[in-house]
Length: 134
Image 1 (cartoon, rainbow, N blue to C red):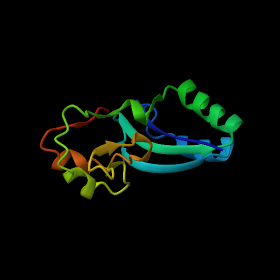
Image 2 (image 1 turned 90 degrees about the vertical axis):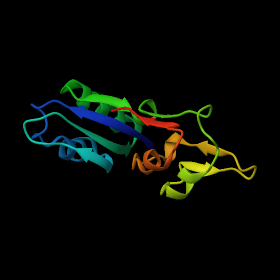
Image 3 (image 1 turned 180 degrees about the vertical axis):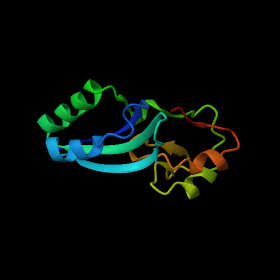
């Protein structure tokens, strides 16, 4: 079983197509939509977790790319700057997934594989140590 999180960007010509349905039906993939902003006749984006057996998973990704969906790993769109971080820990109490957490040494750390892009940390971080780009 392979599982990863992605940001999908759709052009205006794709937003009304049943893309997720096709991933489930044709590639037997499990989809967990974490965030989406898609409007008819406009471009949109979706953050999702995609999982399935290796062959179907790779086939599903090729399908998305083949129809013109821009597929970017989520880890390439979320950035946490340890240098900018003040180590105050405010973000850790607002992070519902535990992606931002305190170690036993009271150091703030970020695990991008646990991030669900809720953006709660953006509002509470005075140092602007977390950036989301999509």
